[in-house]
Amino acid sequence: MAKVTVPEIRRKKERGEKITMLTAYDTPTARILDECGVDVLLVGDSVGSVVAGYPNTLPVTVEEMIYHTRAVVRGTERALVVIDMPFMSYQVSLEEAKRNAGRMIKESGAEAVKLEGGASMRETIKAIVDIDIPVMGHIGLTPQSIHKLGGYKVQRQREKLLEDARAVEEAGAFAVVLECVPEEVAREITSELSIPTIGIGAGPHCDGQVLVIHDLLGLLGDFRPRFVKRYVNLRPIISEAVKRYIEEVKEGLFPDEEHTFHLGDR
Ligand code: KIV
Image 1 (cartoon, protein in one colour):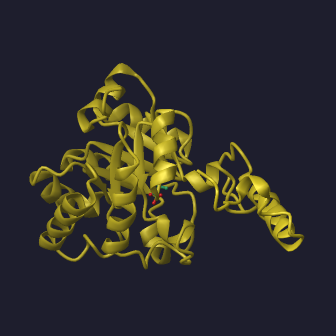
Image 2 (cartoon, protein in one colour; image 1 turned 180 degrees about the horizontal axis):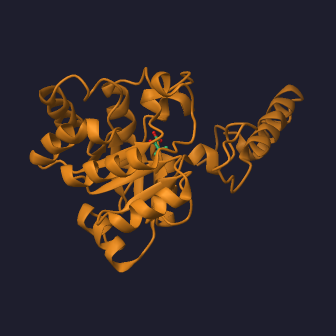
């Protein structure tokens, strides 16, 4: 079982092999996904909305990202672990961006950072790459810009998307996430760039795909963006198990003999 590295992710594009990426935020989930053979585990700042119950990703802190990433790293042997830089950890100055990226790698054990933004983040990506920290870019729908964008909408400005993608590659990123981009534009970017594109809501022509694990597992209820494929609907299964537990405790059926200790047990 060979460890997935940053150069290996780039080679996958050269070989025409699809890259698989999923989010993870805790040790047991990371262990399952890693054992299944996913290439990249992204500790996304989506942890804010998916796990912490924030209304969006903006409140997430560097400390929260480090805490969740350490948990994911402990459950991972093979996959490349990428940590998202949260809102305001890289936008203020190049110095702060480098300090936060360094701290996040040093304290979390992740192997690369991801940050949102295209042409406007060119210098920031370059500064972080210049201190030998691999950067994954993220363009298209960038959730940290939710207030500017006015909602989670498909981004259709072809010229801007191409300019952003080129800027991220030129700045030295090793891969780029394309979020909510029409498939025609994602295809054009993917064939033009030498670095891999990883799509979420960007159609089938990207070099890889990413989904939020809670969406794939059906843990979040019925609202689902069109690009989400729910591979299993765990929410009713979990509810059923919890309801049975409550009933059995109330009726005195749990714990039964099998789940009870006695003085004479060895
Ligand atoms: O935060 C996140 O989970 C992400 C992915 C959706 C790409 O950025």
